[in-house]
Length: 192
Image (cartoon, rainbow, N blue to C red; front, side):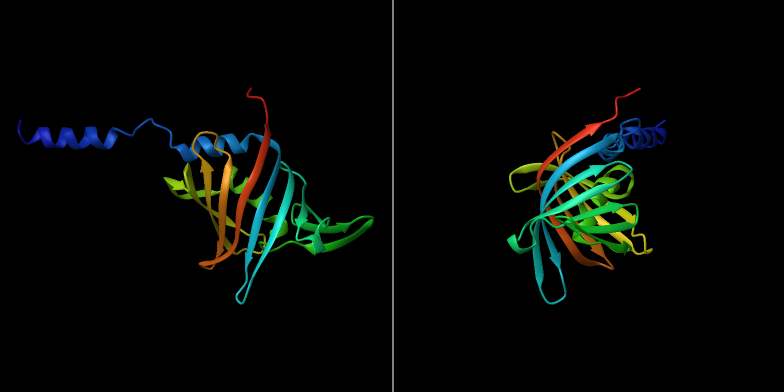
């Protein structure tokens, strides 16, 4: 009997988390139901010799088209990138330029990419962290660029609302972009 008790305790300990959905699964279920979203972010592009900063607003439609508009710096304000699948079109006022196939991660597609990854990226890590004074759920999400390169997005979501707060995009273990989400509003499909 004494030999069985430690094994029973071990089984009880291992099963203590059984049946409890991980927070990451709950978050991904929520983002899979997003039909449209409006968000704004301050995005930093981390280049080998410099960093570039942009303020962007994004109109996201799942699974279709998204548009990202530069709001700062002033000399680029008003330029809009329309992302449709892997195609990118740049526009400014009445001028429009088909920019070809979007095969890599860039400021123009990082916000829609974050929302898609939140819905369907493979969760590599999950945990709770403080970001400043804010309690957050942090996920490391494995995704693949259209060109085939692996992109890992480390994303922090407000623990109470599950709204995105901050994200870092890495390729080949190098930080490529970071985004501080300054506003977020989403519409979800009714449950049915």
